[in-house]
Structure formats: structure tokens, C-alpha cells
Image (tube, rainbow, N blue to C red; front, side, top):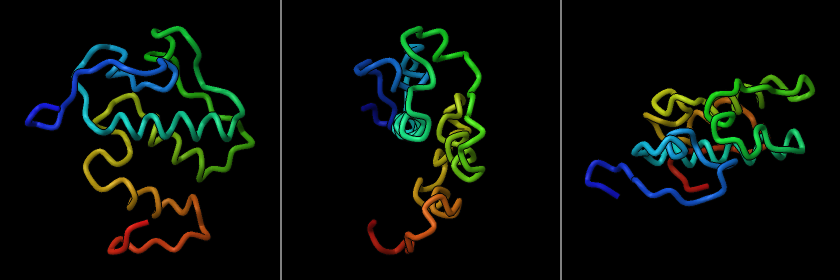
Length: 115
């Protein structure tokens, strides 16, 4: 990791990697939010959004199933934002926006206590 918090290593399965990694750009911890989004997408849809083709992963529009709740769609849209500076949790702590989305309504979130 560089002093400014960016990284340069390419390691992982392409389907789970953020576009900035696949493009060979420097990246930040926002790539972890993308990875979480891919796992949630797979969990809710039963399959990965894209598979294999790196250009498709980088460029194809996000397609969400109508059966997925609007709250989950909002969370996935935020996590799978291709522009890393617009991705959910880029500027602020990830947990706050995710919890305020009420995606997990039974969880009582207190930002002063660890999850």
C-alpha cells in the first residue's frame, strides 16, 4: 500500500474484482465494497452478474432482478457503482450508509460499538 492509501496488486477471481483493478489502475479500499456487492448479488440472484469476460465486467450495465427488494437494489447499486469515487462508503464509514439503508432491519446499529 502506498502512503496515500492506494494499492497496485492484481490478485483474485475477475468476477469478484472491481473495475479499477481489472483496468490496472491504482485502487483504494473501495474495491472491498465492490467485492461485497458481487457476493450479495450472487446471494440474491443465485449467480454472478458477469462471468469471465473482463470487458463485460468493466462495461456492462448492472441488471437487477425485479424480485429483489428495492432496498436491496439500492444497496447493490451503491456497492456495484463502477466509479469508485461514487461507490457506497467511499467518503464515509461503510457501515453507516449501509445500515441507514435499513437493508437488515432487525440489526440494531450503533456506530459507537463494533458490529
